[in-house]
Amino acid sequence: MPPKPLHETALSPECPAGLPDYAELHCLSNFTFLRGASFPEELVERADELGYRAIAITDECSLSGVVRAHTVAKEKGTELIIGSEFHLEEGCHFVLLACNRRGYGYLSHFTCPCSR
Image (cartoon, rainbow, N blue to C red):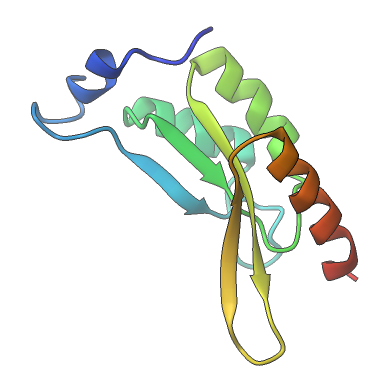
């Protein structure tokens, strides 16, 4: 199923007229141990119910949930943004989002040594 046209998401019954499309850019699934509660599939389904244009699955040092999320996102027509959350020893943490296949490759390469 192709992504929803802009006019359908912005004017859906769940979103008041005039509001822009919404995308959740930092969402943890149950693949982030002790912090995420929902399965990736459930997160995508709920995002679709709420009329979100996109959702980013950003588990901690992992891309484990994105395969399950991708399957449901494709069915629902919701754009899936793939990312991951990282924590540095200094206490700083950040989220990286892949904007294309090349970025996904870099993110995959980066998560491998970080999860050890």
